[in-house]
Image 1 (tube, rainbow, N blue to C red):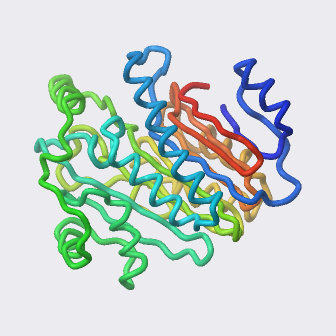
Image 2 (cartoon, one colour; image 1 turned 90 degrees about the horizontal axis):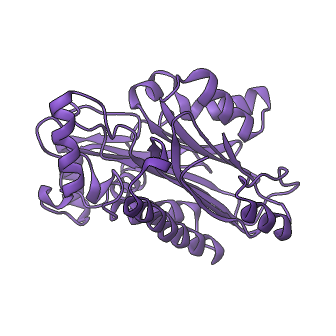
Length: 328
């Protein structure tokens, strides 16, 4: 279990970092100016990861974190921060979203994404898109330019044309690593790579929370399968009164248990802090190895919980927190 919380003095933060200890501090007495947490998917044991792949994970998370931090530090909105962070991760072939999306059973790519505004619970999502370079941006357009929440497949593709968002040939999403992984999965009918998803939650200077999630889905998934990432309340949720949440893992389990909303509900009705709510859901509702989530409260407290071997994640806030981690 890893919890990243804001508000500790810089000296203690440095001591903990030098000691290799997870950053833990008291819940802030008042709301921080801004805070952000992002993830690049739940992992198997990071200690067994290829050294170069680990470096790529850490570098990609660091770049995305800096983008989001700059948006928030200069007064930008939490929605802008979430969108820009996830676009960065979608453009990075290291992650299972956008450029590095996994292959479905037909040897193609179907991408899903969602975004939510905690100030009014407005939300937008797309599922099964095949030519949209950055699905998270199309999801935001569904939220802002239509009266709908979720557009899928051909309908989402048509909407992308109407909105003139960047389109690419389906082969753009190909990567050698994911293709090799797909062939191995097909051969042994396993579920390798099932937890690779990206997400972000941000709190801006106006006190607004936003959350977003983007994924290529499950390796060798059936054509047309949709997981939790584009399902508001399952893979993504945001409410200024409680928290923002982004999930990664076995999507079907996150849908069945409405995981993202469950964290918020435990805060609202049981009056739990975000760390306790996240911990209960991940370790008491979900089964071992189901996945992970990141969450951020309205005061800037950050939680990252996983029941897998690791979670690729990063966090920063206005109190000086700046962290990238893969393991416990």
